[in-house]
Image (cartoon, rainbow, N blue to C red):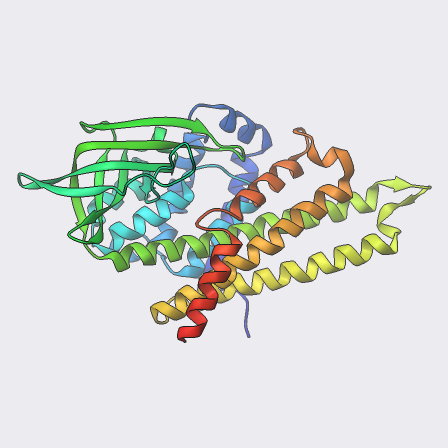
Length: 362
């Protein structure tokens, strides 16, 4: 099987890699995660000018890509650079708009003029239980939403919010402008960098995007592909950083990489990362098949990166020793991000169960 990404995508990867190296180095990231927004807006606008955001969407929506592999290569490079910003929220919310043919709204998002986020998960009460679902009701010629959404990526910076809500017994998607009447937010930083927030809606005016629940499912599936590829990028940095450390850190007068036990552990890790990489490629390759097949391969990839990602983070920290946990060492930040990626859009336990059920029905 040919695992190459093609010449055009390789050019995108090279351009994005150079951009991150030139404009989003570690000092820029540290300043970004310490800011209220949790990301650097200038860096985000630069990526928009470079065409990175346009790569996430098809030509009909004003982009120039939009395939699962286009999405994958962008997110893998973002993972390698550990860049913060509303990548995932822009992708999933944008895919909902793209499916509805709303190119006008997407135009401002792709250009970087507007920040878009995706409010899909319900907020959680103090005892850890989801609150009541968000509901939509007719209000004059439009709609009004009532409910709460939790952990909405970069909510404090968002100009537009795609919100999912129950409507006539099914799930529909709506567009809400930040600052709309009845909408309130509570923002907070995330442990792995970036920011999120809690969204509360009380009879908030909203524009109906689509009553097609399948479009929401497809957007989430695209998010799973993106998350899997990003995780592989993070794992590769963890692996390479650890290999470099094993070659330079000496004990008893020789590099610790000469110790056979550590060599075996690194060989096992390298093989596991290749397995996770194959699973991520499969998620992209089977994305355009039927819904059940798409979801089965997406869950397989998410399960794989959850399992292997945890191994990669643990091994990297253990082989570095105490220094691996320090704030000053970038590796510790990669380990945090890898741990969080294992839980984004469902952890490995959830996706293992989902994969089993989908396989039974196949």
